[in-house]
Length: 228
Ligand code: OGA
Ligand code: MN
Image (cartoon, rainbow, N blue to C red; front, side):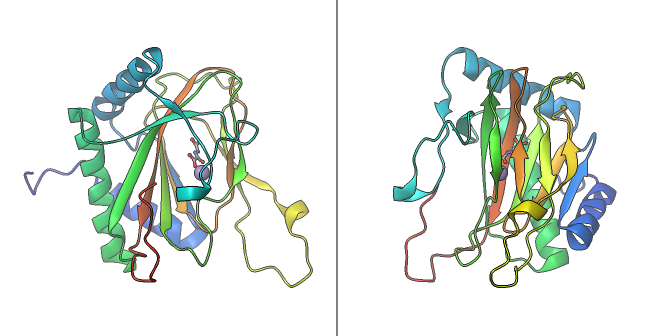
């Protein structure tokens, strides 16, 4: 790749890094260019039409199972099979380098999947990673729908960050929605996987996105880390 050509402008990367440090999450509009999100949208819609996507599950490795009462999306992992995928993954590689340089996170891998939520689907409030099994460190979501009417639902809700609760205190009721993200093409969300609870509110229209995670290498602590 031409080293002077970058997919993500430096001032947007700086804006993202500052927000992650200050509040643990970032949402940037017009962050991904139309020349990149348009072919990705075409690709995921084609896959959805041809039933090439698989019902998503929850949990990893042997714990993985389907729970449509928790999440209703269908997915396919990115594998660099198209030019659009390669460019997207290259852009995330630039983000990985910028995060490692600024925050010494030691991120070593990025994994991402297309996600397609049919009308009526949702993903209940969850964390993408749990402390103690630190593998997913930073979550990313790129939205792909070129138009998103404001009454179509399907927002990503971001909740108050999780902090260590005093013993015996039930934090559940204190969870407040602090931001709502319209899933419109070009918008990019990024947050700390272990600390930012989030949800996909029920969508009224088919909703396409790419969810991804930067990971650290956990193969050192004697268990083999499953790929997905
Ligand atoms: C996920 C997720 C959010 C979104 O896939 O883990 O939370 O807005 N996605 O698609
Ligand atoms: Mn999530």
